[in-house]
Image (spheres, one colour):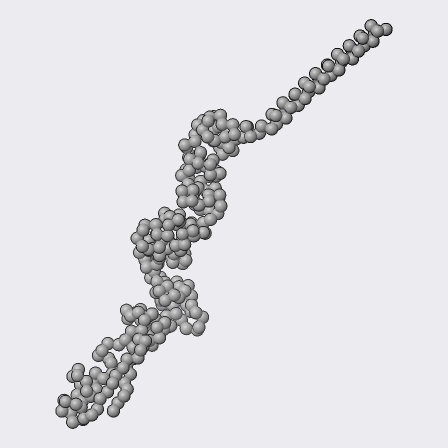
Length: 297
């Protein structure tokens, strides 16, 4: 009896050991599987050709994960493939955010190649990023050529309109005659009010409106300086429509009045016989240009 009981106990112990070993093996297998599932980062960063770009990213961007092509520029946007990977841009598309500016130019000028920022103006020079890109200027420097003139105020094609004004009117700032009609853009008259585009902008008028201030008077008939001469006539006469123009000395009252030393005949020492008469002539202040006689005695 004692012998049978000892054998039974031994068998039970052996069975328990086998069960424990089996459980331990299953646990280890499960643990191994879980470890494999927990390693996606390794697969994501696997770089077969050791060129700094993960295989997965290269495949997604049409590159060869088995060929070291970090220095190539597949889309010819000015960024190498490796730079595209670091910038998070598309190595197959020259303009990842489709804002009209290439990825390489944006990165080089500290703009965001993944955000449409073509209409922004970080240097506040009157030109947007997109316009600066078109003209080959710096969107981070208000005066790209350091000549003392803001990029927006430059006149690249010398047609009388600034770069910013050309864009405002829909012209090409690099072509003096955008529509090839034989008339420079600045000399065009978009609204047909007889003032050129350049003249209107000088006056602060709208070149696309015949009556910029909606007061019922055509822009050409306005008199900005209040000297009695229309803006259109001032331009035609070569005078400044923004500053009243005084008449020549020969037109001033008193040139031919008594007491004049400029050759007029009258009283005083010239023997005319008219004594005690004098005249004081003043010119209205503020540049009205009109002579005024006064203080006769």
